[in-house]
Length: 297
Image (cartoon, rainbow, N blue to C red; front, side, top):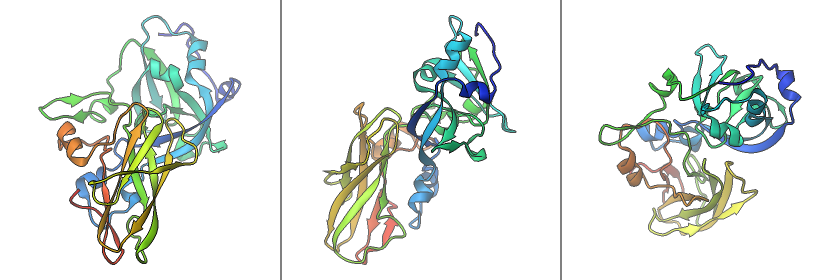
């Protein structure tokens, strides 16, 4: 549903005005391992590592769509990758026009093969699988294509036998990166509790830290640039008295969305979900300073 179907080479795309932005990417299945197979020896990389943040360079999707001319009623777009599995996803044209990017560089260098060289789709704040790599085709349609990738997968079961389809946006989330397993505190005293927070709905406005298992919370300091749809660092200075403690973090974004507790998440989503895990989890500090993943939070 375009006026001028067009084939663009990479060189053609690079002739358009480029933009550079910092954005996070997160797999919709990030933290699945801690949901299904949590263990004391879980590390922050193992539990939360399917996310990254980079400085992306490319051409706004809006520029290319205006070049080809969307016909009236063209509200969705199929993005197709050139990988062997033929990964494809239906994209709302409104999102693509708002801040979608045809990215060909990350952190000042050409995309690497694993990043989708030569061009990938970047949809800031949307679940990772929407950011189709090795992009070869965009097709404008009146509605979603309902591909296998968005029906058999990436659909969220809900309590009561219902399912949530097209749950694109990644919700507010945070993680304490230090202290975390397998770290061991050498003794009582002041310790920095540091971590990352992010949200697919905009900027992080606050991160609260609890050192007593969620009974009380203290606002942490946001450090470095606080950018929309990007990882934000936080730090809280904690005076450890040498007794067992439980460390937790809770993110809040500019829409007012608050990272839920595990109980709140389970009540809203049920036990059968495979995606979008953004609930609060904890680290336990033992009396000897050893840090473990909290099993009963």
